[in-house]
Length: 240
Ligand SMILES: [Zn+2]
Ligand SMILES: [Zn+2]
Image (cartoon, rainbow, N blue to C red):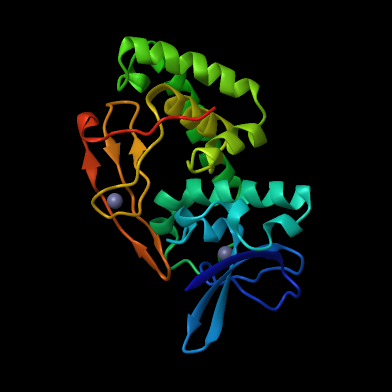
């Protein structure tokens, strides 16, 4: 059994299991507790470092124990750190392996984050007339785009509660969750993966296929790389 928690560090004595550097007192940290033969062993992580672990995909930050005890500012800061870590995870994990002085390099990380965001946005705009949404038919695309604009008018909490009501994941930034909501309103809710049984399918808007990335089963992350063609997946119905 794995428990994930979020809290302000009570002292400056813990260090991050991922990057090995110190976690400052009052810095928000993530604890991963694993039950081993009757006692819990907890490892601590910087929020951005936690985002790079295999546990990060299993739960939204908001679902971790202790999240609601943090102040709004701390919650926002933790989310920002998490996104930063998640974005840097791919290229960085390799590049950073072995470098022992992990000063977190905030500048470069921010830069790469911005760069990605920028290019993503650019692509989305360009794809407005095709590419990025090529997985939809013309009629679906029109629907999706209308729903997407409507979702963007809502605040984040409203989008998340709509997703929650429909059993969909709520992680991601506003554009991502608005997009997920609009997609489910257009085509229906996403079912679980029938190959691994636990992963939530994701829709690739570019080509209309579905894929699974696995899920967290107690202590173990179950990896899955199943892919489905569009006609192999039956969606559920969206409840407003
Ligand atoms: Zn760290
Ligand atoms: Zn799966």
